[in-house]
Image (cartoon, rainbow, N blue to C red; front, side, top):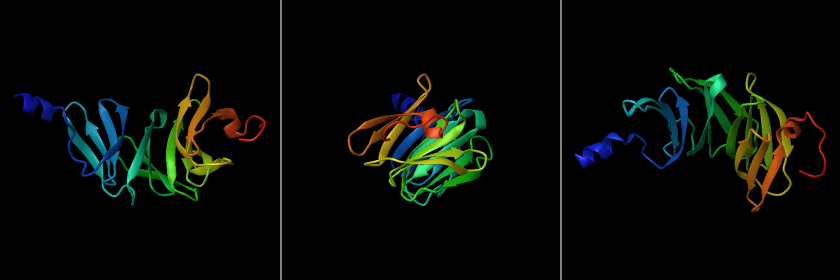
Length: 184
């Protein structure tokens, strides 16, 4: 009985390392993996609702939810971010293409309503979510961003860098609404 309880709490289906999970509301989860799939799960039944095979051609490391747009974004070891419907039919909605190196992180800025990405090309990009076009591309002196998070209270982006530094960016500056002071 103990083993059955344990199994009933497991979401099985991925065939390689699971790298990120996000909650989509309404008892639905999305997960990504090195098996190159994006999977949607029903938390009530513990069953897979949908699997996008070959969501990317490389291992996927990130999934991010844009609640107000009912979208999820995925990033893999390649230069593009893919945008998917966060509800049935879980279809591909768009691609954010423009980075010259592998994307390392993707975040949704809820208070400004745009996607922010970082890549091995030493840039951070701000994207128009409707057009899928770059609104702003900032070159970062030094190294690439390894991961990032958004702080809605202080309206800033916190980026961890390959050079062991953590850098804080004012989102309004990132967006170009304010003058820039000093070197990024």
